[in-house]
Length: 286
Image (cartoon, rainbow, N blue to C red; front, side):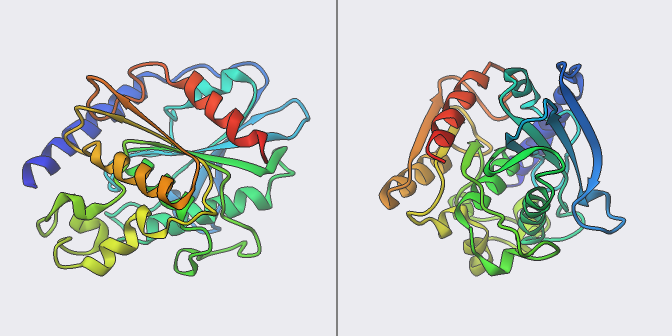
């Protein structure tokens, strides 16, 4: 597990550097609203950016959740920013509390608070509050999947705008962990232990609480799962197990296993067309 954690940190550091280099000029017609406080405090982790498709019409929203092992990363230069060129969707990219600050469930509580804030402010940014999608990668994929399956879980609903729904209508999960018990064990102070407050083989209740697969039922939104078949940090068994559980519950789910791909490949080849096609299908029934 120590080796896996070390490789995870190296890979995520390289990914952060890659994303920083991929910062792009925004397409015309996009208004960027930076540093929006979805919880009114001084914590910079409670901020998000809205990339509004500013043509005066209401548009569906894609919510981006960054990766980083739940302990690093930020909202800057979202990996899915290329989706803005379709001129179909607005985009929100959010920060959330990291495990260097608070353990789980702080991360999903923040994500849900951000979704509620976006719904409460949908008119301000011309968002279609009935068509929200979430996209995440790695740790962000885990949180995206958990957001999709845990609708109505009271323990995760903390903060302002509790009169608003934190539900999303579509989930795109790139190589996110779905069942932490698949790792077998962790050591005190490593990535997984920091997430749930101790070794996973001891804190089994907390592991179950953190697993997206725990909350699956037939009311969940459609899922698109994408995973590399050579991923050693988050093995493809995570997406395969999640896909099978969603199918068993009667939830619409698509699984793409990418031959030859390891971890953190979201910027390595063009998935935009696949994501847009999936979202078009998911939103066509909403």
